[in-house]
Length: 130
Image (cartoon, rainbow, N blue to C red):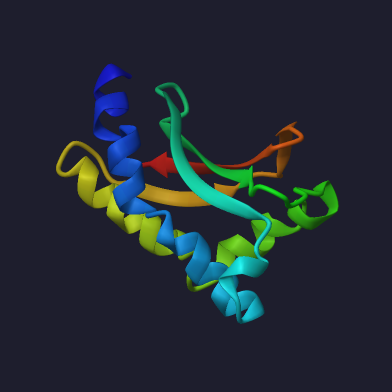
């Protein structure tokens, strides 16, 4: 687990999913990045050795002066799973490259949005290793 934590540090996660991608997502969605009500951050959340599953989270941080309403975020797993700017398939390929020869990524899925607090919602990204 410690090795996985080092492999997927906060800095590495920012390289895989840079902060600018949030603005690109809202630009594509609304035509104006300032219309977005949250910033998206990728975080490593752990490794389940028994299930051979990597756990990441797409953290949605409320932007100042905006509202991170639950009804706006519950449908996001479906949107994120196929949106070309979010590009989950590309994220998984980058994660696979970071893993190198140690193992290989397999299937992935996005879980349901969790409302952690008024200012933070999380979408789990689970990646099975082969």
